Amino acid sequence: MERYYQPEIECAPVEKIKALQDERLLKQVQHVWDNVPYYRHLMEEKGVTPADIKGTQDLHKLPFLTKDDLRKAYPYGLMGKPKKDCVRIQSTSGTTGKRVVAFYTQHDIDLWEDCCARAIMAAGGTEEDVCQVSYGYGLFTGGPGLNGGSHKVGCLTVPTSSGNTERQIMFIQDLESTILCCTPSYAAYLGETMKEMGLTPDQIPLKAGIFGAEAWSEEMRQDIQNTLGIKAYDIYGLTELSGPGVSFECSEQSGMHINEDHFIAEIIDPNTGEVLPEGTKGELVFTSLTKEAFPLLRYRTRDICVLSRKKCSCGRTFIKMAKPMGRSDDMLIIRGVNVFPSQIEAVLLNAGYPANYQIIIDRVRNTDTFDVQVEMTPEMFTDNVGEIQKRQAALEAGLRSMLGISAKVVLVAPKTIARSEGKAVRVIDKRKI
Image 1 (tube, rainbow, N blue to C red):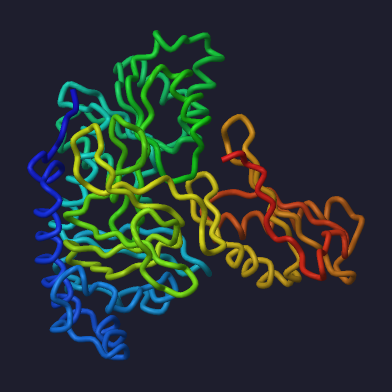
Image 2: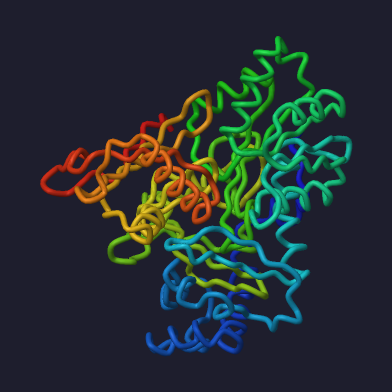
């Protein structure tokens, strides 16, 4: 039996959802115009005022926001409420070391947790469940979002955070955890480890998993489901919009329902910015309808996907988005963390290395490997192994500080990274996803 957290909106007639979006959009545009000078200036440049926006049909008239705007406005330039009304920040890494910092009022957190509660109930969660949240806590949105959603559903919440696999498995067994929330690659790793321990799916108490923050294939889903004996559900979100729970999968497992009472989704042509018809592949753009502290309008996610309003067997009427099929920028997601080649470049240049490098990513035993090969200049070149190891360790420390995850650095002789038509291939992604 399908369960809903807020059935009156999750299963509302589409006309009711559209009317709510129109009403909320007008309020939000006025709120942003009055309280966010940065965006008001963008509107003025485009010759648009709140009076020009009569409903969602006028959304296309508003200017876009990009990650570059977030960097320029860092830290407080896009805030819609004074600091005294905000109670929390969450953060993710940005393109050049400037982090994306999102702000929340208590009301924002309540609504975000509602969205995560909807995802947990769509995965079959109830107050009878034990929900183990193995996403990272702290600045990362995964842990806090699902933790709050789990509380709202009334699950017994186990806030294990990420890592410490032995303890994760002990709690799954001893506390009889039924729902697991983490990245898909970590779920697969937990499954592999349990298999090595001789545990069969029927000896694992889990029944469902809510996995997001990185790309994963249908094959990976099947593997996780078979190893853990669960049903694996996808969840999508961005720190800029709140975090996980912008959209979530239901029992049909055929795309993620977008919480349309809080977010309007558009698909645009990434090159022209033109809005594309439903069912067309393009870049996903979100407008946040209810965020008070960080109210982003027409934020370009850079994720490429398709929207569909095809009737869903679960009874929800929210539009669905397909799994993102790639990016319209150069961002990589490694172990759930956003990584931009420009960040790696910044570390190398600051340490006096040329920007001749290659990023090699693979997935070994369900965990992303992350290697960076860096060319030395002829002046730097040495065959002193101790010296090379010391330099590699220094770069690894610099990258860990910039990215928040560890990479393995290998220094190579000058001119050894292959050039194609004079331009090095910067990223080699061997993951089958």
